[in-house]
Amino acid sequence: IIPFVLISCAKKDDDSTTATTTTYASSASGATASGSITLGNYSISGTYATACFSASDSSAPTDATHIGFVAVVTGSDNYTLETNYYKDSTCTADSLSLGSYSNMDNVTDQGPTASDSTANEKVTYVLRNLTFMAKSTAADTFVTNLWSAYSLDFEVDVLKVLSSGNPYYNLIKVTGTGGDVYFGEADSSAYPSTVGSNKYVKQ
Image (cartoon, rainbow, N blue to C red; front, side):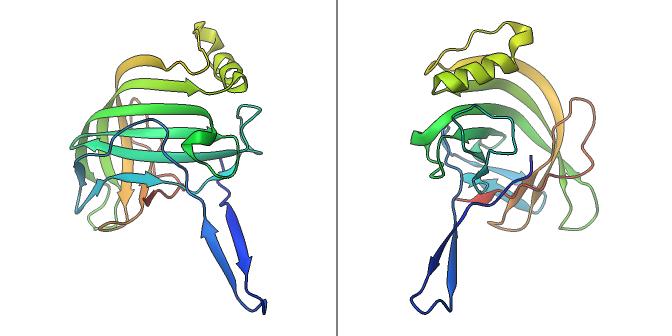
């Protein structure tokens, strides 16, 4: 997925200055921020979100126009990662079409990938469960088709929890104290080569 930053421009009367504002994805999982996770020289806490971007170039429910990602630190060794599909550009929880929530536990820092403070941190964790919330018929159809090989039953407005317990390897980069966070693509057998390009900003 290539993120497109959603920007609204406000022009002054003289047209000499343009101000931009970024709409960030809103959390919709109900996860409560608590504690902090130490990663190398820094720690992460609270809620982080990417800019909300267009769903036009992505696989998404037919009623979804925008996508955003959210990470909520829920304890000293756990966090929830959200992929949210929204019905409009406000990207609020009220405009949710479909939410997919991965709950990571036993997050353990395994050290940096290099000997400098800007390095990615290697982490291991257990994916406790994967949860889905379809808020529309279009979302229900989309997620049902996505998991059709497993014959799973999804319903509108009914939380579907898929238990896991599988261990994973990943990379997380923190740009500084209170800085932005980048996540890699988790793998069940090896660390990814780098983190992704999606920038998670502290909310």
